[in-house]
Amino acid sequence: MERLFNIKYLRYIAYLILQLLVLLLFDSSSLSAQTPDKFFSDSASVEECIKYAMDNQPLVKQLRLDEAIANQTIKISLSDWFPQINFTSGYQYFIKRPVSFFPNSSNPAGPEVQVTTAQKYSSDFQFSASQNIFTNDLLFAGRSARYYRQQVGQTTNKGLIQLVVDINKAFYDILLSEQMLNIINEDIERLSVSLKNADALYTNGTTDKIDYNRAIIALNNARTQKIAVINSIKTKKSLLKQLMGYPDTKPIQLKYNFNEMKKDILIDTTQGIIYNDRIEYQLLKTNIKLQKLSLNYYKDSFLPSLSGYANYNIIYQNNSNSELFNQSFPNSNIGLTLSFPIFAGAKKIENIKRSRLSYERLTLDTINLKNEMNTGYIQALSEYKSNLAAYNITEQNINIARDVYNTVMFQYNQGIKLYLDVIISETDLLTAELNNLSSLISLMYSKLDVQQALGKIPVDY
Image (cartoon, rainbow, N blue to C red):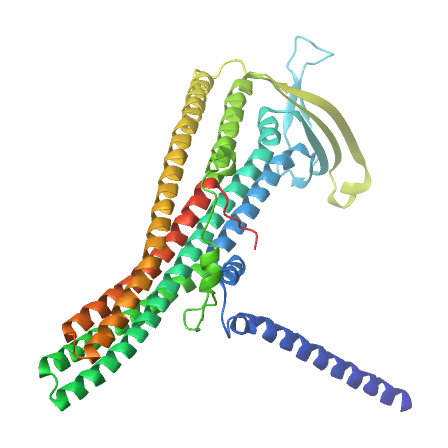
């Protein structure tokens, strides 16, 4: 009885431990599932958005899977270097046994002797092994494995680089709209003050109703513009979430520092392009090497193939099924097989010619690609310099437009200027602020384009 109690007690303790482990696993999985929400509960920088995309974007996962598939394909091709070992077994019953004819030794001139050559029951166990010593296919697989791995890795990096650029641009696009919204809100505050002043002046009889109506129109236009910007922010955030692989139903706030961004706008415009830094050029060089190996593969197709083999067979025969396995008749052999292609039409020669033409074409692509990269870099650098100059000018315009607006507003309150002058100066200030913001974002875009043209986009997050 005491032993039974101890067993029940141990089972109860084990049950409690199991429940505790289940709870711990559940809590850990819940925490991991809530990580994205917690990660973006406050705000996320562009680096954090990219890091999230590297872990959750389906495109990134597909690229990683493509790498894994390519590596498995290479392993499959190389596995033929290993020996191939097989085992087969069979069982056979002759309903009517075969007959062979042999010369009559006692009477050579007489009819041949009919002899039954098989037992009614037979069974066999066969072990066979083969080893490729040299084949053109395996030679090609061994030579090209490294370059195929390079190719798929470079293809992955190319996709990641474009994803990083797209996320950066989507992030900056949202910043542009959010800052535009802040500027428009400031403009609405100024227009609201102007409307109150216009209303007061109209009530006092200082001005007519025209200024008051103009103030209402300007304020309504600003509010309409605000609604359009708010809707555009929603659309742009949806695009950013798509690029990140982030759930569209969950909110996301962006973290940024415009002062730090302004400090980070300058780059060295004297550096030249290095072709090997561009992933496109690296990928093309890898493809050329693979095409060269393909040409050599067709050239080597005239070489013989050599393989070795070994067989061991155990054969059982008997006219009685119950005594079938009483006696065995084993045999074994080893050997080499040499296969030498003599003539297979003109197919191999034509394959060589086609492969050589493809190789020459790829080598010419290097010239085209270099020209494209040079043109792309010059264009990106030119746009960067233009945007930098425009940004510096808009910085000056903001200060001038703000001074003009303050002066005109003061003169309007003194009755010196018309309200139309206030609206014009207000519009100039708003335009200067929006142009400055737009030029800053365009400058960040062109900086990304220059970095991409130089092959300086990092993907390690």
